[in-house]
Image (cartoon, rainbow, N blue to C red; front, top):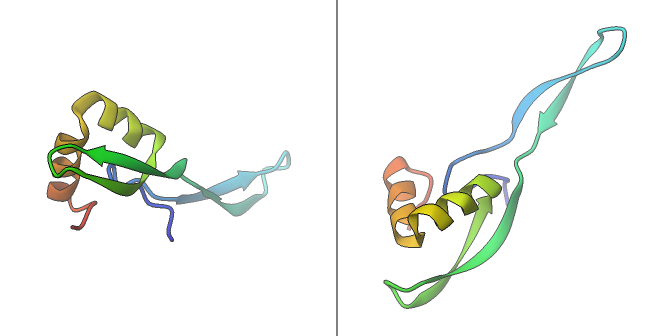
Length: 79
């Protein structure tokens, strides 16, 4: 499974490790994602999502139903 947040769409990006002598080697900045189960009261069911830390904050702020609708509109979540 790829490390992509299903709520925000965040995914890993690439950058450089820069040594003391300013040599640059490629590295990857991973996203802080984890699998969580959420109860969706509108559908009366449990769903499993891969969410980032900021995705959890969005769910806590907006509610699960509004967050899922917004993620589906933006194309991050497919039903």
